[in-house]
Length: 233
Length: 200
Picture 1: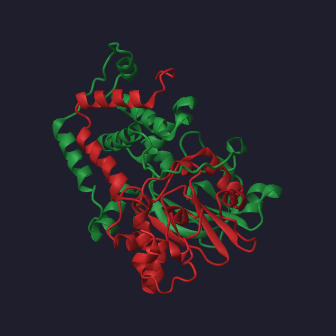
Picture 2 (picture 1 turned 60 degrees about the horizontal axis):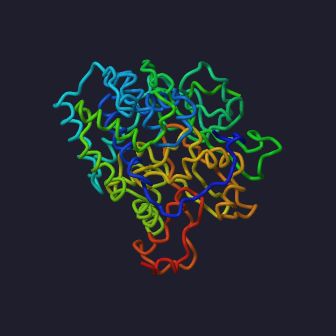
Picture 3 (picture 1 turned 90 degrees about the vertical axis):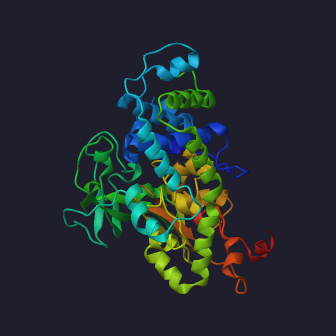
Protein backbone atom coordinates (compact mmCIF):
# COMPACT_ATOMS: atom_id res chain seq x y z
CA UNK A 1 0.00 0.00 0.00
CA UNK A 2 3.08 2.20 0.24
CA UNK A 3 2.53 5.59 -1.40
CA UNK A 4 -0.84 4.66 -2.95
CA UNK A 5 -2.80 7.87 -2.71
CA UNK A 6 -6.19 6.15 -2.97
CA UNK A 7 -5.63 5.07 0.66
CA UNK A 8 -4.52 8.48 1.92
CA UNK A 9 -6.66 9.80 4.72
CA UNK A 10 -6.53 10.67 8.42
CA UNK A 11 -4.62 8.28 10.68
CA UNK A 12 -7.01 7.67 13.56
CA UNK A 13 -5.54 6.57 16.86
CA UNK A 14 -7.83 4.50 19.06
CA UNK A 15 -8.06 5.93 22.58
CA UNK A 16 -8.56 2.79 24.64
CA UNK A 17 -5.35 0.92 23.89
CA UNK A 18 -7.08 -2.44 23.98
CA UNK A 19 -5.26 -5.38 22.36
CA UNK A 20 -8.47 -6.89 21.01
CA UNK A 21 -11.47 -4.64 20.46
CA UNK A 22 -14.01 -7.44 20.42
CA UNK A 23 -14.11 -11.02 21.60
CA UNK A 24 -14.21 -12.16 17.98
CA UNK A 25 -10.82 -10.56 17.22
CA UNK A 26 -9.10 -12.60 19.92
CA UNK A 27 -10.83 -15.79 18.76
CA UNK A 28 -9.62 -15.22 15.19
CA UNK A 29 -6.09 -14.61 16.44
CA UNK A 30 -6.06 -17.77 18.55
CA UNK A 31 -7.61 -19.91 15.81
CA UNK A 32 -5.00 -18.63 13.34
CA UNK A 33 -2.17 -19.65 15.66
CA UNK A 34 -3.66 -23.17 15.84
CA UNK A 35 -4.28 -23.45 12.12
CA UNK A 36 -0.73 -22.44 11.21
CA UNK A 37 0.70 -24.93 13.72
CA UNK A 38 -1.70 -27.66 12.64
CA UNK A 39 -1.04 -27.34 8.94
CA UNK A 40 2.66 -26.71 9.41
CA UNK A 41 2.10 -23.81 7.06
CA UNK A 42 4.37 -20.85 7.08
CA UNK A 43 3.45 -17.20 7.29
CA UNK A 44 4.11 -16.71 3.59
CA UNK A 45 1.52 -19.31 2.67
CA UNK A 46 -0.90 -17.67 5.12
CA UNK A 47 -0.28 -14.22 3.64
CA UNK A 48 -0.73 -15.58 0.11
CA UNK A 49 -3.97 -17.23 1.18
CA UNK A 50 -5.22 -13.86 2.43
CA UNK A 51 -4.11 -12.10 -0.76
CA UNK A 52 -6.27 -14.45 -2.82
CA UNK A 53 -9.45 -13.56 -0.93
CA UNK A 54 -12.18 -11.57 -2.69
CA UNK A 55 -11.30 -7.90 -2.38
CA UNK A 56 -14.25 -6.95 -0.17
CA UNK A 57 -13.26 -9.58 2.38
CA UNK A 58 -9.57 -8.66 2.16
CA UNK A 59 -10.33 -5.01 2.80
CA UNK A 60 -13.10 -5.58 5.39
CA UNK A 61 -10.76 -5.67 8.40
CA UNK A 62 -7.52 -7.16 9.65
CA UNK A 63 -9.24 -9.96 11.53
CA UNK A 64 -11.82 -10.67 8.81
CA UNK A 65 -8.91 -11.10 6.40
CA UNK A 66 -7.10 -13.36 8.87
CA UNK A 67 -10.19 -15.54 9.32
CA UNK A 68 -10.70 -15.76 5.56
CA UNK A 69 -7.07 -16.78 5.13
CA UNK A 70 -7.51 -19.56 7.71
CA UNK A 71 -10.67 -20.85 6.06
CA UNK A 72 -8.96 -21.02 2.67
CA UNK A 73 -6.02 -23.00 4.07
CA UNK A 74 -8.37 -25.39 5.90
CA UNK A 75 -10.49 -25.97 2.79
CA UNK A 76 -7.40 -26.64 0.68
CA UNK A 77 -6.05 -29.04 3.29
CA UNK A 78 -9.37 -30.93 3.30
CA UNK A 79 -10.37 -30.12 6.89
CA UNK A 80 -13.31 -27.96 5.81
CA UNK A 81 -15.73 -28.38 2.93
CA UNK A 82 -15.86 -25.38 0.58
CA UNK A 83 -19.36 -24.44 1.73
CA UNK A 84 -19.21 -25.80 5.26
CA UNK A 85 -18.83 -22.51 7.17
CA UNK A 86 -21.56 -20.73 5.24
CA UNK A 87 -23.85 -23.73 5.72
CA UNK A 88 -23.22 -23.70 9.47
CA UNK A 89 -24.05 -19.99 9.57
CA UNK A 90 -27.25 -20.48 7.62
CA UNK A 91 -28.30 -23.63 9.47
CA UNK A 92 -28.00 -25.88 6.41
CA UNK A 93 -26.25 -29.16 5.88
CA UNK A 94 -23.21 -29.14 3.60
CA UNK A 95 -20.48 -31.51 2.55
CA UNK A 96 -17.83 -31.69 5.25
CA UNK A 97 -14.13 -31.73 4.55
CA UNK A 98 -12.81 -35.30 4.20
CA UNK A 99 -10.08 -34.97 6.83
CA UNK A 100 -10.42 -35.07 10.60
CA UNK A 101 -8.07 -34.06 13.36
CA UNK A 102 -6.00 -36.47 15.37
CA UNK A 103 -6.26 -36.40 19.14
CA UNK A 104 -2.54 -36.95 19.55
CA UNK A 105 -1.62 -34.17 17.17
CA UNK A 106 -3.97 -31.74 18.88
CA UNK A 107 -2.45 -32.61 22.26
CA UNK A 108 1.10 -32.12 20.97
CA UNK A 109 0.30 -28.78 19.33
CA UNK A 110 -1.59 -27.58 22.41
CA UNK A 111 1.38 -28.46 24.64
CA UNK A 112 3.86 -26.71 22.36
CA UNK A 113 1.70 -23.61 22.12
CA UNK A 114 1.15 -23.50 25.88
CA UNK A 115 4.88 -23.78 26.54
CA UNK A 116 5.50 -20.39 24.94
CA UNK A 117 2.72 -18.53 26.74
CA UNK A 118 4.78 -17.12 29.61
CA UNK A 119 5.80 -13.55 30.46
CA UNK A 120 9.46 -14.48 30.22
CA UNK A 121 11.25 -17.44 28.72
CA UNK A 122 14.80 -18.78 29.16
CA UNK A 123 17.42 -16.60 27.49
CA UNK A 124 18.91 -19.45 25.44
CA UNK A 125 15.48 -20.32 24.10
CA UNK A 126 14.81 -16.72 23.01
CA UNK A 127 18.26 -16.22 21.53
CA UNK A 128 18.86 -19.53 19.80
CA UNK A 129 15.74 -21.70 19.46
CA UNK A 130 12.73 -19.42 18.90
CA UNK A 131 14.36 -17.43 16.05
CA UNK A 132 14.81 -20.73 14.24
CA UNK A 133 11.24 -21.89 14.99
CA UNK A 134 9.53 -18.66 13.95
CA UNK A 135 12.03 -17.28 11.45
CA UNK A 136 13.21 -18.44 8.07
CA UNK A 137 16.96 -17.79 8.34
CA UNK A 138 19.03 -20.57 6.79
CA UNK A 139 22.68 -20.95 5.79
CA UNK A 140 23.08 -19.55 2.27
CA UNK A 141 24.30 -21.99 -0.36
CA UNK A 142 25.93 -19.29 -2.45
CA UNK A 143 27.93 -16.16 -1.74
CA UNK A 144 26.21 -12.81 -1.94
CA UNK A 145 26.18 -10.59 -4.99
CA UNK A 146 26.13 -7.22 -3.27
CA UNK A 147 28.10 -5.46 -0.55
CA UNK A 148 27.25 -2.54 1.72
CA UNK A 149 27.55 0.68 -0.27
CA UNK A 150 26.66 -0.92 -3.63
CA UNK A 151 24.19 0.90 -5.84
CA UNK A 152 21.28 -1.29 -6.90
CA UNK A 153 17.98 -1.01 -8.70
CA UNK A 154 14.80 -2.95 -7.89
CA UNK A 155 13.87 -5.19 -10.81
CA UNK A 156 10.47 -5.45 -12.41
CA UNK A 157 8.34 -8.23 -10.95
CA UNK A 158 9.49 -11.55 -12.41
CA UNK A 159 6.27 -13.51 -11.94
CA UNK A 160 2.77 -13.04 -10.54
CA UNK A 161 1.94 -14.52 -7.13
CA UNK A 162 3.11 -13.74 -3.63
CA UNK A 163 6.07 -11.43 -3.20
CA UNK A 164 7.64 -9.26 -0.52
CA UNK A 165 8.69 -6.63 -3.04
CA UNK A 166 6.73 -3.44 -2.35
CA UNK A 167 5.35 -1.93 -5.54
CA UNK A 168 6.57 1.60 -4.82
CA UNK A 169 10.27 0.65 -4.93
CA UNK A 170 10.03 -1.30 -8.20
CA UNK A 171 12.37 0.24 -10.76
CA UNK A 172 13.87 2.61 -8.18
CA UNK A 173 17.58 3.07 -7.40
CA UNK A 174 18.94 2.64 -3.90
CA UNK A 175 22.06 1.91 -1.87
CA UNK A 176 22.71 -1.22 0.17
CA UNK A 177 23.16 -0.31 3.82
CA UNK A 178 23.18 -3.76 5.45
CA UNK A 179 23.25 -7.48 4.75
CA UNK A 180 20.83 -9.45 6.95
CA UNK A 181 21.91 -12.98 6.17
CA UNK A 182 19.79 -15.36 4.11
CA UNK A 183 16.33 -16.81 4.56
CA UNK A 184 13.95 -19.10 2.74
CA UNK A 185 12.45 -17.21 -0.20
CA UNK A 186 8.85 -16.07 0.49
CA UNK A 187 7.86 -15.98 -3.19
CA UNK A 188 8.61 -19.72 -3.42
CA UNK A 189 7.63 -20.69 0.10
CA UNK A 190 4.13 -19.23 -0.26
CA UNK A 191 3.28 -21.90 -2.84
CA UNK A 192 5.31 -24.70 -1.29
CA UNK A 193 8.00 -24.51 -3.96
CA UNK A 194 11.52 -25.40 -2.90
CA UNK A 195 14.09 -22.72 -3.48
CA UNK A 196 17.52 -22.08 -2.05
CA UNK A 197 17.82 -19.50 0.74
CA UNK A 198 18.21 -15.96 -0.56
CA UNK A 199 20.31 -13.14 0.81
CA UNK A 200 18.44 -10.16 2.25
CA UNK A 201 19.74 -6.61 2.14
CA UNK A 202 18.53 -3.36 3.63
CA UNK A 203 18.30 -0.86 0.78
CA UNK A 204 18.07 2.90 1.37
CA UNK A 205 15.96 4.91 -1.07
CA UNK A 206 16.09 8.68 -1.17
CA UNK A 207 12.65 10.28 -1.03
CA UNK A 208 13.37 12.18 -4.24
CA UNK A 209 14.08 8.95 -6.12
CA UNK A 210 10.80 7.43 -4.93
CA UNK A 211 8.40 10.36 -5.21
CA UNK A 212 10.08 12.98 -7.41
CA UNK A 213 8.77 16.49 -6.90
CA UNK A 214 6.22 15.30 -4.37
CA UNK A 215 8.96 14.12 -1.98
CA UNK A 216 9.36 15.78 1.39
CA UNK A 217 12.82 17.19 2.06
CA UNK A 218 15.21 15.08 4.11
CA UNK A 219 13.35 11.80 4.01
CA UNK A 220 14.49 8.32 3.09
CA UNK A 221 12.91 4.89 3.17
CA UNK A 222 14.81 1.73 4.05
CA UNK A 223 13.38 -1.54 2.79
CA UNK A 224 14.64 -5.10 3.33
CA UNK A 225 14.79 -6.80 -0.06
CA UNK A 226 15.70 -10.29 -1.25
CA UNK A 227 18.58 -10.64 -3.70
CA UNK A 228 16.42 -11.81 -6.66
CA UNK A 229 14.55 -8.47 -6.49
CA UNK A 230 17.76 -6.51 -7.09
CA UNK A 231 20.11 -5.77 -9.96
CA UNK A 232 23.33 -3.76 -10.02
CA UNK A 233 22.84 -0.11 -10.95
CA UNK B 1 -17.33 -18.06 0.71
CA UNK B 2 -20.46 -15.98 0.89
CA UNK B 3 -20.01 -12.23 0.67
CA UNK B 4 -23.40 -11.55 2.21
CA UNK B 5 -22.51 -12.70 5.68
CA UNK B 6 -19.91 -10.39 7.00
CA UNK B 7 -20.55 -10.59 10.66
CA UNK B 8 -17.17 -11.45 12.10
CA UNK B 9 -18.52 -12.60 15.45
CA UNK B 10 -21.01 -15.04 13.95
CA UNK B 11 -18.52 -16.27 11.40
CA UNK B 12 -15.69 -16.93 13.82
CA UNK B 13 -18.10 -18.76 16.11
CA UNK B 14 -19.16 -20.97 13.21
CA UNK B 15 -15.54 -21.67 12.28
CA UNK B 16 -14.53 -22.38 15.86
CA UNK B 17 -17.46 -24.72 16.48
CA UNK B 18 -16.60 -26.69 13.34
CA UNK B 19 -12.92 -26.91 14.26
CA UNK B 20 -13.69 -28.01 17.82
CA UNK B 21 -16.05 -30.73 16.55
CA UNK B 22 -13.37 -31.96 14.17
CA UNK B 23 -10.77 -32.04 16.94
CA UNK B 24 -8.56 -29.41 15.31
CA UNK B 25 -8.42 -26.72 17.98
CA UNK B 26 -8.67 -26.62 21.78
CA UNK B 27 -10.79 -23.63 22.88
CA UNK B 28 -9.03 -23.52 26.25
CA UNK B 29 -5.69 -22.97 24.55
CA UNK B 30 -7.25 -20.23 22.40
CA UNK B 31 -8.32 -18.57 25.68
CA UNK B 32 -4.74 -18.80 26.93
CA UNK B 33 -3.31 -17.35 23.71
CA UNK B 34 -5.65 -14.36 24.02
CA UNK B 35 -4.79 -13.96 27.69
CA UNK B 36 -1.06 -14.08 26.86
CA UNK B 37 -1.24 -11.30 24.28
CA UNK B 38 -3.52 -9.20 26.48
CA UNK B 39 -1.40 -9.45 29.62
CA UNK B 40 2.05 -10.99 29.16
CA UNK B 41 3.47 -9.20 26.15
CA UNK B 42 3.19 -5.53 25.35
CA UNK B 43 5.11 -2.28 25.16
CA UNK B 44 6.20 -2.58 28.81
CA UNK B 45 8.68 -5.18 27.57
CA UNK B 46 10.18 -2.82 25.02
CA UNK B 47 10.22 0.00 27.57
CA UNK B 48 12.44 -2.07 29.88
CA UNK B 49 14.81 -2.73 26.99
CA UNK B 50 15.04 0.94 26.02
CA UNK B 51 15.45 2.15 29.61
CA UNK B 52 18.33 -0.25 30.08
CA UNK B 53 19.95 0.96 26.86
CA UNK B 54 19.69 4.53 28.17
CA UNK B 55 21.39 3.64 31.45
CA UNK B 56 23.88 0.92 30.50
CA UNK B 57 26.28 1.81 27.64
CA UNK B 58 27.48 -1.78 27.22
CA UNK B 59 23.90 -3.00 26.90
CA UNK B 60 23.14 -0.23 24.40
CA UNK B 61 26.04 -1.47 22.26
CA UNK B 62 24.75 -5.04 22.40
CA UNK B 63 21.22 -3.89 21.56
CA UNK B 64 22.31 -1.93 18.51
CA UNK B 65 24.57 -4.76 17.33
CA UNK B 66 22.13 -7.66 17.78
CA UNK B 67 18.79 -6.76 19.29
CA UNK B 68 17.41 -10.32 19.15
CA UNK B 69 20.11 -11.48 21.59
CA UNK B 70 19.97 -8.32 23.70
CA UNK B 71 16.18 -8.63 24.06
CA UNK B 72 16.63 -12.33 24.93
CA UNK B 73 18.61 -11.24 28.00
CA UNK B 74 15.24 -10.13 29.42
CA UNK B 75 13.61 -13.42 28.45
CA UNK B 76 11.65 -11.86 25.58
CA UNK B 77 11.36 -13.65 22.25
CA UNK B 78 9.07 -15.74 20.08
CA UNK B 79 6.69 -15.16 17.19
CA UNK B 80 7.53 -12.07 15.12
CA UNK B 81 10.77 -11.69 17.05
CA UNK B 82 13.01 -13.89 14.91
CA UNK B 83 15.27 -10.97 13.94
CA UNK B 84 14.84 -7.79 15.96
CA UNK B 85 16.79 -4.73 14.91
CA UNK B 86 17.05 -1.65 17.13
CA UNK B 87 17.44 1.73 15.45
CA UNK B 88 18.42 4.75 17.53
CA UNK B 89 17.10 8.27 17.18
CA UNK B 90 19.65 11.09 17.30
CA UNK B 91 19.53 14.86 17.08
CA UNK B 92 19.75 14.62 13.30
CA UNK B 93 17.96 11.36 12.40
CA UNK B 94 14.48 10.28 13.43
CA UNK B 95 13.44 6.67 12.79
CA UNK B 96 9.88 5.48 12.24
CA UNK B 97 8.58 1.99 11.42
CA UNK B 98 5.84 0.87 9.04
CA UNK B 99 4.92 -2.29 7.14
CA UNK B 100 3.45 -1.35 3.78
CA UNK B 101 2.82 -4.96 2.72
CA UNK B 102 0.95 -6.17 5.81
CA UNK B 103 1.54 -5.26 9.45
CA UNK B 104 4.88 -6.71 10.54
CA UNK B 105 5.65 -5.61 14.09
CA UNK B 106 8.05 -6.80 16.83
CA UNK B 107 5.54 -8.68 19.01
CA UNK B 108 7.91 -9.83 21.81
CA UNK B 109 8.81 -6.22 22.71
CA UNK B 110 5.70 -4.27 21.68
CA UNK B 111 2.85 -6.80 21.77
CA UNK B 112 0.29 -6.80 18.96
CA UNK B 113 0.08 -3.68 16.81
CA UNK B 114 -2.55 -0.99 17.38
CA UNK B 115 -5.32 -0.69 14.83
CA UNK B 116 -3.93 2.49 13.21
CA UNK B 117 -0.61 0.76 12.49
CA UNK B 118 -2.54 -1.79 10.39
CA UNK B 119 -4.64 0.83 8.63
CA UNK B 120 -4.31 1.55 4.89
CA UNK B 121 -3.90 5.25 5.76
CA UNK B 122 -0.79 4.76 7.90
CA UNK B 123 0.71 2.14 5.59
CA UNK B 124 0.30 4.22 2.44
CA UNK B 125 1.29 7.62 3.82
CA UNK B 126 4.21 6.89 6.13
CA UNK B 127 6.59 6.07 3.26
CA UNK B 128 5.38 8.85 0.94
CA UNK B 129 4.88 11.79 3.30
CA UNK B 130 6.32 10.85 6.70
CA UNK B 131 6.90 14.43 7.84
CA UNK B 132 3.31 15.36 7.21
CA UNK B 133 1.92 12.15 8.70
CA UNK B 134 4.06 12.50 11.84
CA UNK B 135 3.02 16.12 12.26
CA UNK B 136 -0.60 15.07 12.02
CA UNK B 137 0.06 12.44 14.71
CA UNK B 138 1.49 15.14 16.97
CA UNK B 139 5.21 14.92 16.23
CA UNK B 140 6.42 18.05 14.47
CA UNK B 141 10.08 17.50 13.59
CA UNK B 142 12.38 20.41 12.71
CA UNK B 143 13.49 20.50 9.08
CA UNK B 144 17.08 19.75 10.12
CA UNK B 145 16.06 16.33 11.40
CA UNK B 146 16.17 13.75 8.63
CA UNK B 147 13.46 11.10 8.67
CA UNK B 148 14.37 7.47 8.10
CA UNK B 149 11.35 5.27 7.49
CA UNK B 150 11.84 1.53 7.97
CA UNK B 151 9.44 -0.54 5.85
CA UNK B 152 9.70 -3.94 7.54
CA UNK B 153 9.10 -6.08 4.51
CA UNK B 154 11.16 -9.19 5.22
CA UNK B 155 12.66 -11.02 8.22
CA UNK B 156 13.66 -8.12 10.46
CA UNK B 157 11.32 -6.36 12.89
CA UNK B 158 12.34 -2.88 13.97
CA UNK B 159 12.37 -1.28 17.41
CA UNK B 160 13.00 2.45 17.66
CA UNK B 161 15.17 3.59 20.56
CA UNK B 162 13.90 7.12 21.23
CA UNK B 163 16.16 9.88 22.54
CA UNK B 164 16.44 10.01 26.30
CA UNK B 165 14.51 13.08 27.43
CA UNK B 166 16.40 15.98 29.02
CA UNK B 167 16.24 16.33 32.78
CA UNK B 168 16.23 12.59 33.49
CA UNK B 169 19.77 12.19 34.84
CA UNK B 170 18.57 11.29 38.32
CA UNK B 171 16.04 8.66 37.20
CA UNK B 172 16.84 4.96 37.35
CA UNK B 173 15.93 2.39 34.69
CA UNK B 174 12.61 1.50 36.33
CA UNK B 175 11.53 5.15 36.41
CA UNK B 176 12.81 5.78 32.91
CA UNK B 177 10.83 2.84 31.52
CA UNK B 178 7.63 4.75 32.37
CA UNK B 179 8.65 7.41 29.86
CA UNK B 180 9.00 4.94 26.98
CA UNK B 181 5.67 4.56 25.22
CA UNK B 182 4.62 2.21 22.47
CA UNK B 183 4.31 5.12 20.07
CA UNK B 184 7.85 6.28 20.88
CA UNK B 185 9.17 2.81 20.04
CA UNK B 186 7.30 2.80 16.70
CA UNK B 187 8.70 6.27 16.07
CA UNK B 188 5.49 8.30 15.90
CA UNK B 189 6.15 10.11 19.20
CA UNK B 190 8.97 11.15 21.50
CA UNK B 191 9.57 9.63 24.91
CA UNK B 192 7.54 11.35 27.63
CA UNK B 193 8.98 14.22 29.71
CA UNK B 194 10.42 13.30 33.14
CA UNK B 195 7.42 14.41 35.20
CA UNK B 196 5.50 11.48 33.68
CA UNK B 197 7.70 9.10 35.69
CA UNK B 198 6.16 10.36 38.91
CA UNK B 199 2.68 9.19 37.87
CA UNK B 200 1.61 5.67 38.70
